[in-house]
Image 1 (tube, rainbow, N blue to C red):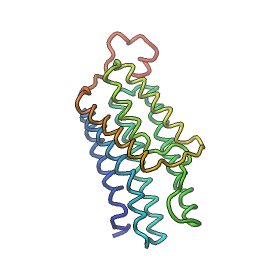
Image 2 (image 1 turned 120 degrees about the vertical axis):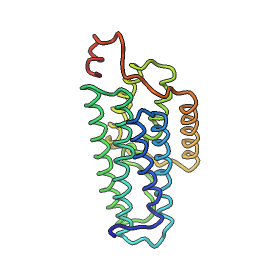
Image 3 (image 1 turned 30 degrees about the horizontal axis):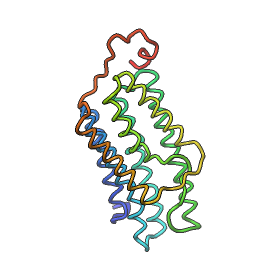
Image 4 (image 1 turned 90 degrees about the vertical axis):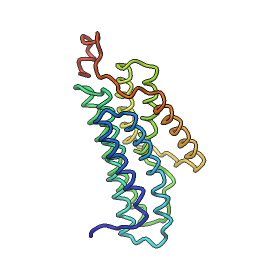
Length: 227
């Protein structure tokens, strides 16, 4: 069989499978389950690189395979999957489609650029990179669950507009060239706890189904674009 099969890529594959399952749940209307799957995918992705680097005798081909397979899975987990969630939650119509497409294109550009940088870096140095170039794509596994919590307190139309804003801003930050220092283990632990609290709140309090209809708002320009 082609490919490399060892423990260094197991979490990456688990993250992908979790996202594929989450996509099926989102399409089926189980939005809470989909958000939880997204958060879990982010958790698995957070540690896959650390686990891969524990294998000290990796060949150059194994390292390059790890870089490529990680980015390919991330396209699904944190590119397509969040777009599907936002679509089923009401990001639709002309404006919604444009923003969804923009977010996905930015995701692919960000990951392609990462592959180039990481491949070149691994030729001259060992270990993990200490900085991100642009916002890491895994950020959506944190931002979207936190944004989803706001459906507790805001109306459905405003919630859809919020998702539009999140997609546009996060997508743009994927491709803006700035250096971001990678977080420490302590900060990662705080993020895990924060997202875990959000997931628990979503599971306990969020509406299971969110209507995509906005009665009485048919005449506004925004709602025409969103339908």
